[in-house]
Length: 399
Image 1 (cartoon, helix red, strand yellow):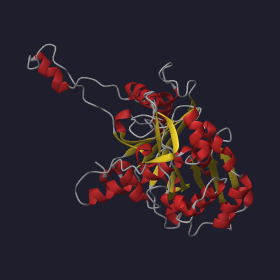
Image 2: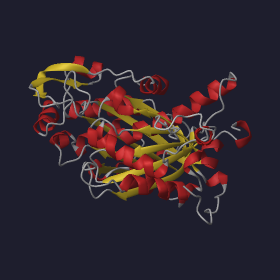
Image 3: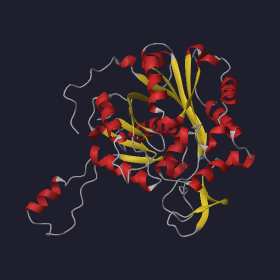
Image 4: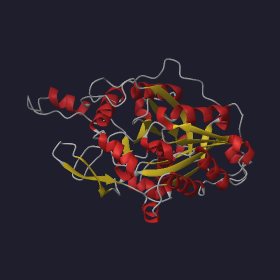
């Protein structure tokens, strides 16, 4: 992909919107490093649930579905709204807010889609009360609740970024909680023949979790001595006319969103050093991702292989494997299952932690920190999102 003819003007770095705090609670616990390690190593926690028998993806009978709940919540017997409130409190308690005037904070909280079987568990009043209980100095009128059915990159992340750029708020908390491990959700997915059963390679693994990121202007964060985990370089959010139908219609939303985000940030596809993905659980997810990557990072024969062909060092008819240009990626569903509304906030936490891990490795002389990470929003949402986070480390330290 070529750079835009006229790269967008670079804003004053002090006015950049940054992630200055992160918090999560998922099957890997509530520490970002542990969650990142689980995702990077594909350490899944899913186990067969004998109470949920679903059709096999290959059409050969039925088997127990794989489910990835948070062990503590399962042991407590919590379900529905109680699980959401518990995840919210546990994640929110770890968000660093020292020195912030909570009356000047906007909270964007995403909820499970009302149209889904689990939508009834998302009780607005109960979750607002849980937010107020956790953050008693946060005025109720500062809380925005959003249905996750249309994606979150636009209605939550882009709006929070815009509000901070316009100085309507001093800080913004963007997050979500969701659970798909309840019987209602599992039965809904089973009826759609989308559950992954024991022994299958494709399908959805119901999971659950909650995650939050704290956004501020860089000058504000540094002024109160807060760490800068990542710079929010670009947010793009575009419709996917054929969500879940990549086998019948070429995917257009995600490629367009990624191209838009790259143009916003003035970057080439080759500048992306890592991707955090939620796609890939179902066959159509993998196909959508393949169609996307072929447009953004097309495979091509390497110069080394081209020269070998010219010198007849490769026999005619021999397989020619193109170099894989894809950035390193980690896929959240492999470790945590499907997290619904909580997926994008969790991905942002993991991407920010990736920079921190890189910096630790760099300090040991093992690798240079990557400059940019792409977070992709896919799934059942009617829109596709692409978010680019940039490493706050000065360029001379990442060369």
